[in-house]
Length: 254
Image (cartoon, rainbow, N blue to C red; front, side, top):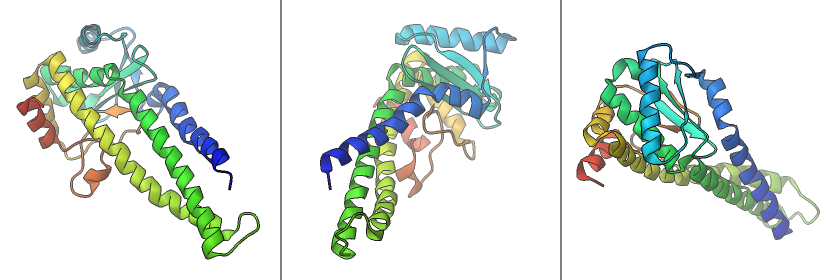
């Protein structure tokens, strides 16, 4: 077993997929979510959205993101993009219908903060690292099982493939828990950033409004979403902390 070659292969595969997803994230968002980009505002709401994001982007020190709306009855929003000066911020039609402008302003501030904090790039790098470890150790496990359990001394036998597949599944579950933990930390920072950009009471109001929603529409992992978290065991795999915990963090100034 050539460990050096395995490390290189694991890194290429592990980081390659994550980086490609990040680079394609804006295009994927527009396609998968059906985002309508606001180039020329068609009404007062669209004009207000553009003006609000521009004001917040200037305050946060980032380039003006593209602003869009996607059709969904669920109140939600997300930010995505490969860097701070080439991002996309989008809100759902349900969010615009169910929240007042102060609450929407807070949600926009949350998403702009994700961009300013470089969360998409950070999580891409974290995902790349854990992907590399998953691939590397699953192959190590496969090699061990093939040699020690199946006593195979020639080439790659059935034990290698069985061990690799089982290792991939188990290590991927652990990796998802790690990535979700980091993502939850970034959500607290984005909430604090949204409070700075729009006001703490508006940010708390937006989160409280979300508590009345039954469930948020799932968004691809490449997007930094406003989102709702599950509870119990699901919380381990959730990219967002429980709403009540986020509200308490804002109230306590953490």
